[in-house]
Amino acid sequence: MVPIMADNDCRATLIEVATPLFAEKGFNGVSVREIAGLAGVNVSMISYYFGGKEGLYGAVLNEQFAVLQRVAKIAHTATDPLKKFELYVRDTVARYRRNPYLLRFYAGELTNPTPCFATIVKPAIQEVVKTLQEFFTDGLSHHQFREGLEPTDTALALAGMINFYFLLEPATGELVDHSPERDEELIRHIMDIFANGVLK
Amino acid sequence: MVPIMADNDCRATLIEVATPLFAEKGFNGVSVREIAGLAGVNVSMISYYFGGKEGLYGAVLNEQFAVLQRVAKIAHTATDPLKKFELYVRDTVARYRRNPYLLRFYAGELTNPTPCFATIVKPAIQEVVKTLQEFFTDGLSHHQFREGLEPTDTALALAGMINFYFLLEPATGELVDHSPERDEELIRHIMDIFANGVLK
Image (cartoon, rainbow over the protein chains, first blue to last red):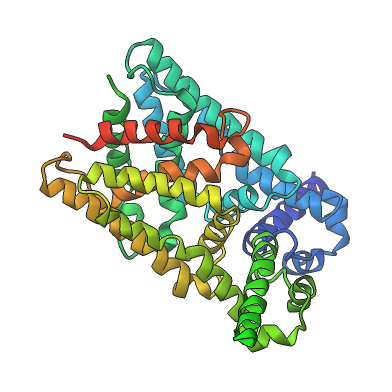
């Protein structure tokens, strides 16, 4: 078992070291030599485990965007559609708080896509939007939400309220308290506007 | 007057050529040689007009973010605070439709700031958020909006609804029609949710 453990360690270390580097410098700004050096392994290990820099970048993105899969599980944890939306907002906040690099990959791939955008990022985002669409359609069928609202636009509106708050943090940190201590107030505030905005 | 015209032409051409290059490759991914070559001018012109690559990048960003100054003017074009918010949403849509590179600089500087972030981008964004805050405070003082909503959070929520729609377009183009023909419907939809969300 020891060699397999060591294998997993080396692979995990390379992903761990490469994540902040790719986040900060982008795919083209990082060399395999730099990553291997920081990970303390031979550069050939990147080819061995990932088939090259592209493969390692793909593994990093897969790990980053895998957290979005949790959104689909919300459908099974609540019955009230409005509660499902709140769990999504709550989950989004937790996601950014836990993962300091996600937003860079997210915004970076949306505005300067690599080949991973089509295979990893886009499907992950589409899954979330489709899940939110379903929450809304569900609420519509239970006559909880107003008629005339378009499910995708409504899903994007709610996603925008919470995601943009984190994207804008470096510019608006002096205008409003962005500390985790205020997260609960933020979630309540967004859900207050959204609920009043869409409920019958 | 001829030399001055030519001067302005050369300066404008350099900015025009550099804008898509910086947007697509980032500040570090572009060389002065590349820009000068595409602009058809001697590389020394970049030092002459802008003091170097940093100066040219700053001029590009100044031009990109100058459009945000229009938001402050909305205060004088409407008296109803809700109408002011609608004009902001309308202005934001027009801004992205007219300027295909703005979003890349916007998202790029927020997630991977250059020195221009603090001097150009952050002040421009803060100005917009402050203006939206004022619209909301104005509406509160006229008892148009519900009590208990925080002006900055509310401003960011509305900004998020419309900006995130454009940021997510590459991922959600197949789920909802993002064509300019639907802009009017989108503006009405966002303002429908927002108005119901914040009005008394």
